[in-house]
Amino acid sequence: MSCSLIHLANASYRLGRTLDFDPRSPRCPNDKDANAMLSRDYRSPFVVPESV
Image (cartoon, rainbow, N blue to C red; front, side, top):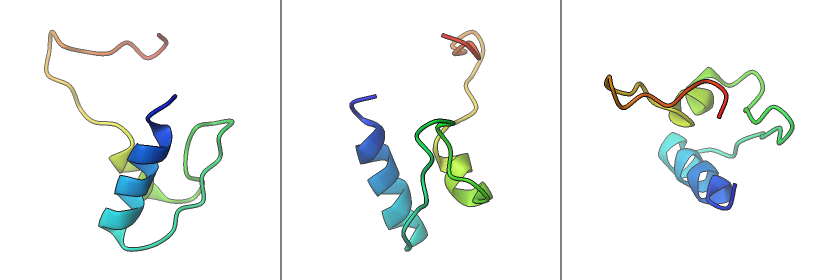
């Protein structure tokens, strides 16, 4: 949680625009590019479970 603003700022900078972030979901509604930058595909066996 403490690094969320840093990750959002990085995504905003890389996309070159501001982001509309919904902290309840935590996603950027209607923004496929921004949401793709908020997570990544992990290599097995280093997988993060869906619910932690």
